[in-house]
Length: 226
Ligand SMILES: Nc1nc2c(ncn2[C@@H]2O[C@H](COP(=O)(O)OP(=O)(O)OP(=O)(O)O)[C@@H](O)[C@H]2O)c(=O)[nH]1
Ligand SMILES: [Mg+2]
Image (cartoon, rainbow, N blue to C red; front, side, top):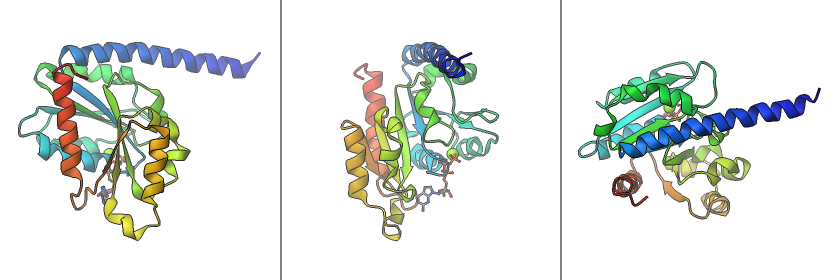
């Protein structure tokens, strides 16, 4: 028996079933006029911290919901709940990424008509989430600069599929040997259209630019221009 071939077939079926549910989710988000984004990055890149720092810029006039993906705990959802926004935790029980079916199971937990922006924080991982469409309008990568300027070229798939990358922990720039020009050039070589934001969630630099961009994306999505 050709085991290699069977494995490829199983993976292909898994992905196409994921894609079908992702389209159902996407239709649901569109019907409710809710921009839904999928935030992806390595463990510790600063995804939850970025959400915590982003929410205060948006929630004065936008209704924001959050779906937190984690392998085991609800620690990230607890951190987000403090900000007074609706949040649901999905535990994958060992899985290294969210999939569209997991997201579909929590859709009933939110008032979608009353939500302008849904932020999904994926499980910390720079590889597997790239292959699993959740039905989001677009992906945002959070990459902390201390992970190294070689990461975009070593993990290109995720950068190819994202609309924006937030380069976080810029406050560490002078404490590391990271070459920001290499980082930016490599990202643009992989994806010339990607938006690049340089941010420090620690000192707040860059947050205004990032949140203004995101606010504009919500506006254009809701006006059906995206
Ligand atoms: N110095 C500095 N530390 C940061 C910054 N952003 C986040 N951190 C710290 O980085 C650590 C990890 O941040 P999290 O936001 O939990 O990272 P995460 O990507 O959500 O991690 P997982 O959910 O486990 O994948 C925390 O100790 C944060 O305080 C930053 O801009 N500068
Ligand atoms: Mg987190």
